[in-house]
Image 1 (tube, rainbow, N blue to C red):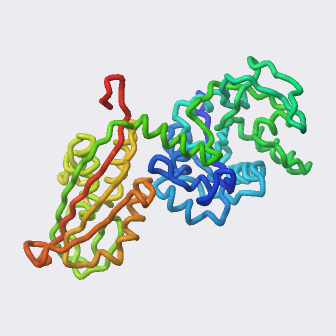
Image 2: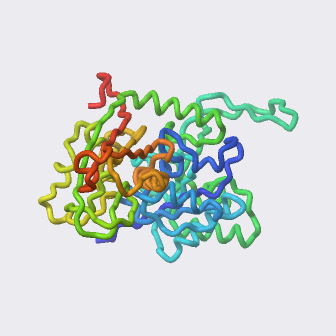
Length: 398
Protein backbone atom coordinates (compact mmCIF):
# COMPACT_ATOMS: atom_id res chain seq x y z
CA UNK A 1 0.00 0.00 0.00
CA UNK A 2 1.56 3.37 -0.98
CA UNK A 3 2.36 5.79 1.78
CA UNK A 4 0.31 8.99 2.09
CA UNK A 5 1.83 11.92 0.28
CA UNK A 6 3.64 14.43 2.45
CA UNK A 7 2.49 18.02 2.04
CA UNK A 8 4.36 21.12 3.21
CA UNK A 9 3.36 24.77 2.94
CA UNK A 10 5.40 27.92 2.35
CA UNK A 11 4.07 31.19 3.75
CA UNK A 12 5.58 34.12 1.84
CA UNK A 13 5.77 37.05 4.28
CA UNK A 14 8.88 39.04 3.36
CA UNK A 15 7.17 41.90 1.52
CA UNK A 16 6.86 45.48 2.73
CA UNK A 17 3.26 46.05 1.59
CA UNK A 18 3.82 49.72 0.69
CA UNK A 19 0.50 50.06 -1.15
CA UNK A 20 -1.34 49.29 2.10
CA UNK A 21 -0.34 52.67 3.51
CA UNK A 22 1.26 53.55 6.84
CA UNK A 23 1.38 51.22 9.81
CA UNK A 24 4.25 48.90 9.01
CA UNK A 25 4.24 45.70 6.93
CA UNK A 26 0.60 44.78 6.30
CA UNK A 27 1.05 41.15 7.33
CA UNK A 28 1.63 42.26 10.94
CA UNK A 29 -1.35 44.59 11.16
CA UNK A 30 -4.53 43.57 12.92
CA UNK A 31 -7.76 42.68 11.17
CA UNK A 32 -10.77 41.43 13.06
CA UNK A 33 -8.75 41.32 16.28
CA UNK A 34 -5.94 39.11 14.94
CA UNK A 35 -2.83 39.81 12.93
CA UNK A 36 -3.02 39.19 9.19
CA UNK A 37 -0.11 36.73 9.31
CA UNK A 38 -1.67 34.70 12.13
CA UNK A 39 -4.91 34.36 10.18
CA UNK A 40 -3.03 33.39 7.01
CA UNK A 41 -0.79 30.86 8.75
CA UNK A 42 -3.08 29.18 11.30
CA UNK A 43 -5.18 27.13 8.82
CA UNK A 44 -2.04 25.48 7.42
CA UNK A 45 -0.61 24.78 10.87
CA UNK A 46 -3.83 23.08 11.92
CA UNK A 47 -4.57 21.21 8.69
CA UNK A 48 -4.20 17.44 9.23
CA UNK A 49 -2.56 16.89 5.83
CA UNK A 50 0.17 19.55 6.22
CA UNK A 51 3.20 18.25 8.09
CA UNK A 52 5.37 21.38 7.90
CA UNK A 53 4.81 25.12 7.50
CA UNK A 54 7.82 27.10 6.25
CA UNK A 55 7.62 30.88 6.82
CA UNK A 56 9.76 33.19 4.72
CA UNK A 57 10.44 36.59 6.33
CA UNK A 58 12.34 39.80 6.09
CA UNK A 59 14.84 39.25 8.96
CA UNK A 60 14.03 42.74 10.24
CA UNK A 61 10.55 41.45 11.10
CA UNK A 62 11.64 38.54 13.32
CA UNK A 63 10.40 40.04 16.59
CA UNK A 64 7.02 40.98 15.12
CA UNK A 65 6.69 37.54 13.57
CA UNK A 66 7.50 35.71 16.79
CA UNK A 67 4.98 37.78 18.74
CA UNK A 68 2.26 37.30 16.12
CA UNK A 69 2.47 33.50 15.76
CA UNK A 70 3.96 32.36 19.07
CA UNK A 71 1.22 29.72 19.53
CA UNK A 72 1.67 28.13 16.08
CA UNK A 73 4.09 25.34 15.22
CA UNK A 74 6.26 26.01 12.18
CA UNK A 75 9.70 25.44 10.72
CA UNK A 76 12.48 27.94 11.49
CA UNK A 77 11.86 30.97 9.25
CA UNK A 78 13.91 31.40 6.09
CA UNK A 79 15.18 34.82 5.04
CA UNK A 80 13.32 36.30 2.09
CA UNK A 81 14.88 37.84 -0.98
CA UNK A 82 14.46 41.08 -2.91
CA UNK A 83 11.51 39.69 -4.91
CA UNK A 84 8.63 37.36 -4.22
CA UNK A 85 10.22 34.82 -6.55
CA UNK A 86 13.48 34.90 -4.57
CA UNK A 87 11.58 34.49 -1.32
CA UNK A 88 9.69 31.44 -2.58
CA UNK A 89 12.97 29.95 -3.82
CA UNK A 90 14.46 30.45 -0.33
CA UNK A 91 11.48 28.66 1.20
CA UNK A 92 11.77 25.76 -1.20
CA UNK A 93 15.47 25.34 -0.48
CA UNK A 94 14.75 25.44 3.26
CA UNK A 95 12.30 22.55 2.81
CA UNK A 96 14.51 20.54 0.48
CA UNK A 97 15.92 18.41 3.29
CA UNK A 98 12.40 17.36 4.31
CA UNK A 99 11.60 16.08 0.81
CA UNK A 100 7.87 16.77 0.72
CA UNK A 101 5.89 15.32 -2.16
CA UNK A 102 3.63 18.36 -2.50
CA UNK A 103 4.17 21.99 -1.58
CA UNK A 104 1.56 24.74 -1.21
CA UNK A 105 2.78 28.32 -1.69
CA UNK A 106 0.63 30.96 -0.01
CA UNK A 107 0.85 34.73 0.37
CA UNK A 108 0.67 36.05 3.93
CA UNK A 109 -1.48 38.91 2.60
CA UNK A 110 -4.36 36.43 2.06
CA UNK A 111 -5.62 35.93 5.65
CA UNK A 112 -8.93 34.26 4.82
CA UNK A 113 -7.75 30.94 3.40
CA UNK A 114 -10.03 28.09 4.46
CA UNK A 115 -9.28 24.49 5.36
CA UNK A 116 -11.50 23.42 2.46
CA UNK A 117 -9.42 25.44 -0.03
CA UNK A 118 -6.21 23.92 1.36
CA UNK A 119 -7.68 20.44 0.92
CA UNK A 120 -8.63 21.23 -2.70
CA UNK A 121 -5.09 22.49 -3.35
CA UNK A 122 -3.54 19.30 -1.99
CA UNK A 123 -5.87 17.12 -4.06
CA UNK A 124 -5.23 19.14 -7.22
CA UNK A 125 -1.45 18.98 -6.86
CA UNK A 126 -1.55 15.24 -6.35
CA UNK A 127 -3.77 14.81 -9.39
CA UNK A 128 -2.16 17.27 -11.84
CA UNK A 129 1.31 18.15 -10.52
CA UNK A 130 0.75 21.90 -10.76
CA UNK A 131 -2.47 23.78 -10.02
CA UNK A 132 -3.73 27.17 -8.88
CA UNK A 133 -7.02 28.22 -7.29
CA UNK A 134 -8.99 30.43 -9.66
CA UNK A 135 -12.26 32.31 -9.70
CA UNK A 136 -14.18 33.51 -12.72
CA UNK A 137 -14.02 37.13 -13.86
CA UNK A 138 -17.42 38.82 -13.65
CA UNK A 139 -16.47 42.26 -15.01
CA UNK A 140 -15.54 43.07 -18.59
CA UNK A 141 -11.76 43.42 -18.91
CA UNK A 142 -10.05 45.87 -21.26
CA UNK A 143 -6.50 45.67 -22.62
CA UNK A 144 -5.08 49.22 -22.88
CA UNK A 145 -1.97 50.75 -24.41
CA UNK A 146 0.54 53.06 -22.78
CA UNK A 147 -1.77 56.04 -23.29
CA UNK A 148 -4.72 54.36 -21.64
CA UNK A 149 -6.57 53.68 -24.89
CA UNK A 150 -8.42 50.38 -25.32
CA UNK A 151 -6.60 47.94 -27.59
CA UNK A 152 -8.75 44.85 -27.09
CA UNK A 153 -11.50 43.25 -25.02
CA UNK A 154 -10.47 39.73 -24.02
CA UNK A 155 -13.12 37.03 -23.97
CA UNK A 156 -14.36 37.08 -20.38
CA UNK A 157 -15.34 33.40 -20.33
CA UNK A 158 -11.67 32.41 -20.63
CA UNK A 159 -10.35 34.76 -17.94
CA UNK A 160 -9.69 33.73 -14.36
CA UNK A 161 -8.35 35.48 -11.24
CA UNK A 162 -5.51 33.44 -9.76
CA UNK A 163 -5.19 33.06 -6.00
CA UNK A 164 -2.96 31.23 -3.55
CA UNK A 165 -2.17 28.67 -2.23
CA UNK A 166 -0.69 27.50 -5.50
CA UNK A 167 0.11 23.79 -5.38
CA UNK A 168 2.90 21.80 -7.02
CA UNK A 169 4.86 18.62 -6.95
CA UNK A 170 7.80 19.71 -4.81
CA UNK A 171 10.64 18.44 -6.98
CA UNK A 172 9.16 19.99 -10.14
CA UNK A 173 8.69 23.51 -8.74
CA UNK A 174 12.05 23.46 -6.94
CA UNK A 175 13.76 22.50 -10.21
CA UNK A 176 11.91 25.29 -12.03
CA UNK A 177 13.03 27.88 -9.46
CA UNK A 178 16.62 26.69 -9.63
CA UNK A 179 16.60 26.91 -13.43
CA UNK A 180 15.18 30.44 -13.36
CA UNK A 181 17.82 31.50 -10.81
CA UNK A 182 20.64 30.07 -12.96
CA UNK A 183 19.35 31.95 -16.00
CA UNK A 184 18.97 35.22 -14.07
CA UNK A 185 15.18 35.41 -14.55
CA UNK A 186 13.53 37.13 -11.59
CA UNK A 187 10.38 38.88 -12.77
CA UNK A 188 7.76 36.12 -12.46
CA UNK A 189 4.82 37.50 -10.49
CA UNK A 190 3.60 34.14 -9.26
CA UNK A 191 4.74 30.53 -9.20
CA UNK A 192 2.25 29.46 -11.85
CA UNK A 193 3.91 31.83 -14.35
CA UNK A 194 7.32 30.40 -13.49
CA UNK A 195 5.96 26.86 -13.83
CA UNK A 196 4.51 27.72 -17.27
CA UNK A 197 7.92 29.05 -18.34
CA UNK A 198 9.52 25.81 -17.14
CA UNK A 199 7.18 23.78 -19.36
CA UNK A 200 4.76 22.54 -16.73
CA UNK A 201 1.06 22.36 -17.50
CA UNK A 202 -0.74 24.33 -14.81
CA UNK A 203 -4.30 23.29 -14.01
CA UNK A 204 -6.90 25.30 -12.11
CA UNK A 205 -9.22 24.30 -9.30
CA UNK A 206 -12.07 26.04 -7.55
CA UNK A 207 -10.90 29.11 -5.66
CA UNK A 208 -12.73 31.02 -2.96
CA UNK A 209 -14.10 34.58 -3.37
CA UNK A 210 -13.52 35.15 0.36
CA UNK A 211 -9.80 34.41 -0.07
CA UNK A 212 -9.07 38.06 -0.79
CA UNK A 213 -5.61 39.60 -0.92
CA UNK A 214 -5.12 42.68 1.25
CA UNK A 215 -3.31 45.29 -0.84
CA UNK A 216 -4.68 48.79 -0.16
CA UNK A 217 -6.03 50.63 2.91
CA UNK A 218 -9.49 50.26 1.37
CA UNK A 219 -9.08 46.47 1.44
CA UNK A 220 -8.56 46.57 5.19
CA UNK A 221 -11.63 48.76 5.70
CA UNK A 222 -13.80 46.52 3.52
CA UNK A 223 -12.69 43.27 5.15
CA UNK A 224 -13.07 44.65 8.67
CA UNK A 225 -16.66 45.57 7.80
CA UNK A 226 -17.29 42.14 6.29
CA UNK A 227 -15.97 40.36 9.36
CA UNK A 228 -17.97 42.56 11.71
CA UNK A 229 -21.18 41.95 9.74
CA UNK A 230 -20.68 38.20 9.73
CA UNK A 231 -19.85 38.01 13.42
CA UNK A 232 -22.98 39.73 14.64
CA UNK A 233 -23.76 37.54 17.68
CA UNK A 234 -21.85 39.41 20.41
CA UNK A 235 -21.52 37.67 23.78
CA UNK A 236 -19.81 38.44 27.08
CA UNK A 237 -18.67 36.02 29.78
CA UNK A 238 -17.08 36.47 33.19
CA UNK A 239 -14.66 34.33 35.17
CA UNK A 240 -13.24 34.14 38.70
CA UNK A 241 -10.44 32.09 40.23
CA UNK A 242 -8.46 32.00 43.44
CA UNK A 243 -5.44 30.08 44.70
CA UNK A 244 -3.83 29.96 48.10
CA UNK A 245 -0.11 30.35 48.65
CA UNK A 246 2.11 27.41 49.52
CA UNK A 247 5.76 26.53 49.31
CA UNK A 248 7.69 27.83 46.34
CA UNK A 249 9.83 30.60 44.92
CA UNK A 250 7.68 31.94 42.09
CA UNK A 251 4.13 32.46 40.84
CA UNK A 252 2.70 32.06 37.34
CA UNK A 253 0.46 35.08 36.71
CA UNK A 254 -1.09 35.73 33.30
CA UNK A 255 1.49 33.46 31.69
CA UNK A 256 4.47 35.27 33.21
CA UNK A 257 6.82 33.68 35.77
CA UNK A 258 7.00 36.10 38.70
CA UNK A 259 9.68 35.62 41.42
CA UNK A 260 8.03 35.52 44.86
CA UNK A 261 8.61 34.21 48.36
CA UNK A 262 5.70 31.77 48.00
CA UNK A 263 4.21 29.53 45.33
CA UNK A 264 0.63 28.48 44.53
CA UNK A 265 -1.16 25.49 45.99
CA UNK A 266 -2.74 24.14 42.82
CA UNK A 267 -3.20 21.05 40.68
CA UNK A 268 -1.87 22.82 37.58
CA UNK A 269 0.54 25.78 37.65
CA UNK A 270 -2.10 27.78 39.53
CA UNK A 271 -2.20 30.73 37.12
CA UNK A 272 -5.32 32.46 38.49
CA UNK A 273 -5.29 35.11 35.76
CA UNK A 274 -5.35 32.65 32.88
CA UNK A 275 -7.83 30.39 34.70
CA UNK A 276 -10.24 33.30 35.13
CA UNK A 277 -9.87 34.15 31.43
CA UNK A 278 -10.61 30.55 30.44
CA UNK A 279 -13.80 30.60 32.50
CA UNK A 280 -14.79 33.95 30.96
CA UNK A 281 -14.38 32.61 27.41
CA UNK A 282 -16.22 29.37 28.18
CA UNK A 283 -18.94 31.39 29.85
CA UNK A 284 -19.41 33.52 26.76
CA UNK A 285 -19.79 30.28 24.79
CA UNK A 286 -22.17 28.79 27.40
CA UNK A 287 -19.77 25.85 27.33
CA UNK A 288 -19.25 24.85 30.96
CA UNK A 289 -16.28 25.94 33.04
CA UNK A 290 -12.60 25.13 33.32
CA UNK A 291 -13.23 22.32 35.81
CA UNK A 292 -15.58 20.51 33.44
CA UNK A 293 -12.99 20.52 30.66
CA UNK A 294 -9.88 20.03 32.81
CA UNK A 295 -11.01 18.25 36.00
CA UNK A 296 -8.47 18.49 38.85
CA UNK A 297 -9.06 14.77 39.48
CA UNK A 298 -7.38 13.97 36.17
CA UNK A 299 -3.64 13.38 36.76
CA UNK A 300 -2.69 14.51 33.23
CA UNK A 301 -3.28 18.14 34.29
CA UNK A 302 -1.02 17.98 37.34
CA UNK A 303 1.50 20.80 37.01
CA UNK A 304 0.17 21.67 33.52
CA UNK A 305 0.96 25.07 32.05
CA UNK A 306 -2.21 27.15 31.92
CA UNK A 307 -1.48 28.54 28.47
CA UNK A 308 -2.74 25.15 27.22
CA UNK A 309 -6.11 25.78 28.87
CA UNK A 310 -6.38 29.28 27.40
CA UNK A 311 -5.43 28.10 23.91
CA UNK A 312 -8.07 25.37 24.22
CA UNK A 313 -10.74 27.94 25.10
CA UNK A 314 -9.75 30.09 22.12
CA UNK A 315 -9.94 27.02 19.88
CA UNK A 316 -13.51 26.41 21.12
CA UNK A 317 -14.42 29.89 19.86
CA UNK A 318 -12.66 29.34 16.54
CA UNK A 319 -14.41 25.99 16.07
CA UNK A 320 -17.72 27.83 16.23
CA UNK A 321 -16.57 30.21 13.49
CA UNK A 322 -16.12 33.02 16.01
CA UNK A 323 -13.45 35.43 17.18
CA UNK A 324 -12.50 36.95 20.51
CA UNK A 325 -12.98 40.72 20.51
CA UNK A 326 -11.57 41.65 23.92
CA UNK A 327 -10.11 40.08 27.07
CA UNK A 328 -9.76 41.74 30.46
CA UNK A 329 -8.38 40.34 33.71
CA UNK A 330 -8.11 42.00 37.13
CA UNK A 331 -5.66 40.65 39.71
CA UNK A 332 -6.57 41.09 43.39
CA UNK A 333 -3.54 40.89 45.64
CA UNK A 334 -1.27 42.88 47.94
CA UNK A 335 1.89 41.38 46.51
CA UNK A 336 3.51 40.91 44.07
CA UNK A 337 2.97 44.27 42.45
CA UNK A 338 1.35 43.78 39.05
CA UNK A 339 1.89 47.26 37.60
CA UNK A 340 5.53 46.79 36.53
CA UNK A 341 4.58 43.48 34.87
CA UNK A 342 1.34 44.59 33.21
CA UNK A 343 2.69 45.03 29.68
CA UNK A 344 4.56 41.72 29.77
CA UNK A 345 1.37 39.98 30.89
CA UNK A 346 -0.70 41.64 28.18
CA UNK A 347 1.86 40.61 25.56
CA UNK A 348 1.89 37.03 26.84
CA UNK A 349 -1.92 36.72 26.75
CA UNK A 350 -1.95 38.26 23.27
CA UNK A 351 0.65 35.73 22.14
CA UNK A 352 -1.31 32.77 23.52
CA UNK A 353 -4.62 33.86 22.03
CA UNK A 354 -3.45 35.41 18.75
CA UNK A 355 -5.10 38.71 19.65
CA UNK A 356 -3.59 42.10 19.05
CA UNK A 357 -2.27 43.39 22.38
CA UNK A 358 -4.61 46.38 22.09
CA UNK A 359 -7.46 43.95 22.76
CA UNK A 360 -6.01 42.64 26.03
CA UNK A 361 -6.31 44.48 29.37
CA UNK A 362 -4.57 43.55 32.63
CA UNK A 363 -5.50 45.46 35.77
CA UNK A 364 -4.73 45.08 39.45
CA UNK A 365 -6.12 46.16 42.79
CA UNK A 366 -5.66 45.37 46.46
CA UNK A 367 -8.38 44.52 48.97
CA UNK A 368 -7.15 47.19 51.42
CA UNK A 369 -5.68 44.50 53.68
CA UNK A 370 -9.12 42.90 54.09
CA UNK A 371 -9.89 39.20 53.64
CA UNK A 372 -7.57 36.40 52.54
CA UNK A 373 -5.94 38.50 49.82
CA UNK A 374 -5.38 41.32 52.31
CA UNK A 375 -3.71 38.87 54.70
CA UNK A 376 -1.56 37.70 51.77
CA UNK A 377 -2.84 34.15 51.97
CA UNK A 378 -3.45 33.93 48.25
CA UNK A 379 -4.43 35.74 45.05
CA UNK A 380 -7.79 36.13 43.30
CA UNK A 381 -8.60 37.16 39.74
CA UNK A 382 -11.70 38.23 37.88
CA UNK A 383 -11.98 38.30 34.09
CA UNK A 384 -14.31 39.15 31.27
CA UNK A 385 -14.32 38.07 27.63
CA UNK A 386 -16.23 39.52 24.70
CA UNK A 387 -16.58 37.22 21.72
CA UNK A 388 -18.27 37.48 18.34
CA UNK A 389 -20.01 34.47 16.79
CA UNK A 390 -21.60 34.19 13.35
CA UNK A 391 -25.35 34.46 12.86
CA UNK A 392 -27.12 31.47 11.35
CA UNK A 393 -30.27 31.61 9.25
CA UNK A 394 -32.36 32.08 12.40
CA UNK A 395 -30.26 35.01 13.56
CA UNK A 396 -28.32 33.03 16.17
CA UNK A 397 -25.05 31.15 16.16
CA UNK A 398 -26.46 27.86 17.40
